[in-house]
Image (cartoon, rainbow, N blue to C red; front, side):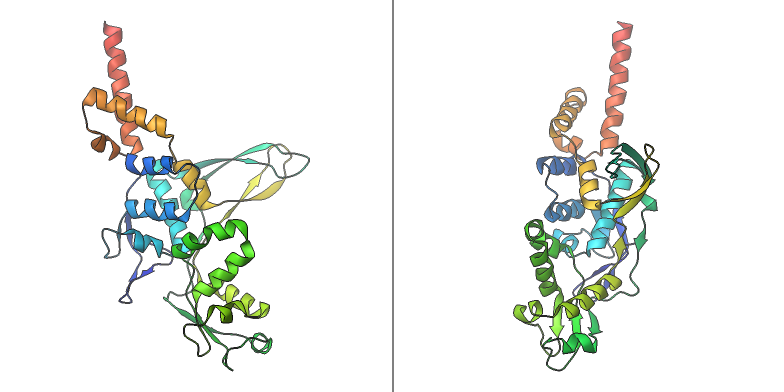
Length: 294
């Protein structure tokens, strides 16, 4: 079940999903993307691997693109689990200036904290404080604000801007998510960007409270100095990097299986990595036995 969920155009909420492991096709996509961590890549990978979302099957990119940010992160975690298993190993560097030792951390995917929202709705309404309204915010005498929560469309549109100017990206995100300011529906971009710092802070905090969340940090103990530290855990960056396969290795595996089994490229690329490696191990044992017997 997704911690948040997808609201379709009829107002129905979809949370239950079915997920399949990565096949060679998805591994090729990740390999060709190089070191890209783009939200567009996440959208494409999820649309290929999420087999069903509620009553939606197949699940097109337009749906995975409009999933809430935490739901996309949660699906990446589950994709890692079904592809490689629950146990994760990570190598970190102790951040203390007088140490810098390498720290190994092992944790289960199922143990990553996931926070569900207090309630679910496609749109949320809040009332700004009197101080925020009095602080120059032009709401036509009305302190009501209606907004949606950030999703994959926002990640795709704002990823480049975020890499260059975080402040502008946050302003643009607020402009995209706010659906009504007082009586203005939809509000002009200038109205949203012109909100006072207090009004913006209150809206952003309410959005944080209402959004599902996947823990983005992990605690670790350095074996070198014995001190504890908290390391950032970027779900998207870590898991896409771990799921990525070297394209040359992938094509070598395809060639090896095609040469011995006479399977087509399409048949081999539809296999998961575990299945490919199982057949490769069987072949290696058979070839080794034949060579030993000769």
